[in-house]
Image (tube, rainbow, N blue to C red):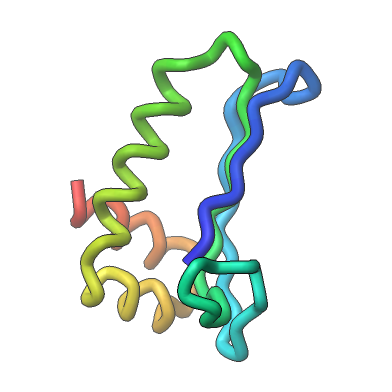
Length: 88
């Protein structure tokens, strides 16, 4: 999995996107394995509260293999929302 994130004045508000790759993508991970799950975030540098809360929550959720497996099997955006809410 990968959590690319940036804080920049170019980001006018917090944004997040999810993507996955069944083949995997070489994202330069420490274990040299391809990444399959991606949560991309951008936020303005002055928006600490939401940005840090979301980052922390995602990091905690992604520790669970069952959650990562569920993300790999999603078939609709609604299923992503349900999976995230179930982990709260």
